Image (cartoon, rainbow, N blue to C red; front, side, top):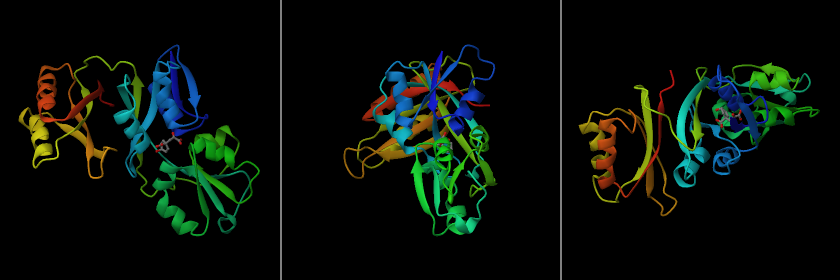
Length: 274
Ligand SMILES: O=C(O)C(=O)C[C@]1(C(=O)O)C=C[C@@H](O)C=C1
């Protein structure tokens, strides 16, 4: 089985893939350069599965991933989730003093997770976004004064130096990744379901939709709104609930929700990450 992820080797996404595939045989990992390419590898039939970052405990959603799953990813379902701790290092090719650092490279999510650190330690440095943290680590090769923010593992793989560790603004830092495929997962009894919907622009319509879940005592574990992209001020809601779409109670709730929403898409049911 082929599994796509955001490469090159050494990204946090690769760490998530390693965790996800522990004990699973016959997996071949395939690197892609950007998160949209990783998502598209399922629709292009390049891979059977893909692992993408979806939300972080400091910075919140990975918007590109959320928006693609809402708007573009027809035929793609969520079949699992993996959560990993995220510890960022400051990485350079050669020894460097902080005062000589003039440029910082990293993925925009990583930059956002270290915003306070960057402004405190390097108020005048240029900050440049790369497609992944491992790409940033590769980018410091033979570049004095240029440093990367990324995983320790990437520094080790590419033979770079760690200048500082655990530099994210909140020490306890986690990112949740989703496993995508053409099908979701079977009922396990400890499941979650991700749905997206929009409601009519009239008073109480979101309350009305969420009331379906409240009445059936279905626990909601996440709600997030994203712009509908159709009109300013119009939103689509992403909601995670406990239970599988084939559980009677969830099935009924989804049926009822159809009648209270303008648009409803079930992104998939999958086992909760332990
Ligand atoms: O650049 C990487 O290493 C990634 O795997 C991407 C990513 C993300 O987009 O959230 C994954 C985990 C961290 O939150 C930072 C970056």
